[in-house]
Image: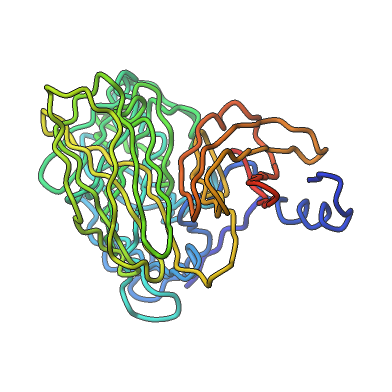
Length: 417
């Protein structure tokens, strides 16, 4: 048995280039998530029952996924395992909960190297539970695996979700008694996101506590993407900037903290193609000193694709992670400019090859050739990786990002969500 869902600068250069861009960017106004669950096939077991295994090819480039129904509570049934409404890229169960019943459907998501049966660690697995809503007689809840190094993000002052924890799990329970029709990401106060790093599987439970006497149907949605929340513990991080530069196959990292930060230590973490982060250094923040700028040099020769991040631990034990910087060993003389992710919300990371130390100019053009954003960047000789904010001021749409360093001009097509 199978089921399927179907998805609903011009800087005065060449007309052909503009045509290619328009074709390239003709897709849904909703930005693509990290993992797309569009088409699934039952490859084992019986559809919508415990033990059923669903195969999703190419959930992202080079990655397949299998989703197994590992448990269904007594009094709970599935009308649809992956309903077509709401967000086509999300996995969207429709559950029926009997009267006076609290229960869930449990699903295990496993990620594989495309075309093989080899489990594949992912640098990050972001999973967002959408529309965790309810009424005075039914309260939806979701539970997601939260492993060591993972974190949860949501609107702390939203008032509609109670987010709690127990070992290995993050639980979001509706307490707002407001029902939002369908499946909708506009009600961010009824959403929460977990991010697990360096794992090849997570488990998600979608459920509800039905206080009524009659069976209630609930529309659930799990969207594999990070969202930006107001009043989030990530909304005003201690980190001002994290950037790096590669020279002669060696990487130097630099970061700045806000003046009144609550950070006690910073661990520098590194990952290669294995997808596993390991500590390569640690900095302790001394209260008696007013230092805000820090530097760390990785003396190992750069090889293949290499990723860096900062693990920041506060005085009360809370952990935050920085943006991830990516470097890749290149042939001598090659020059590149990359903006990632290519679908941007409020911030993006730039990788710029600069021929010399100095000022570089970032310009963003709309498809009419108008400059809609401009920012001066300080770069040094080599490959610079740095975070740029302020993209949230741009309307959603397609743009061309251009960077000028000396006589060199490089560009990349991007999408602003």
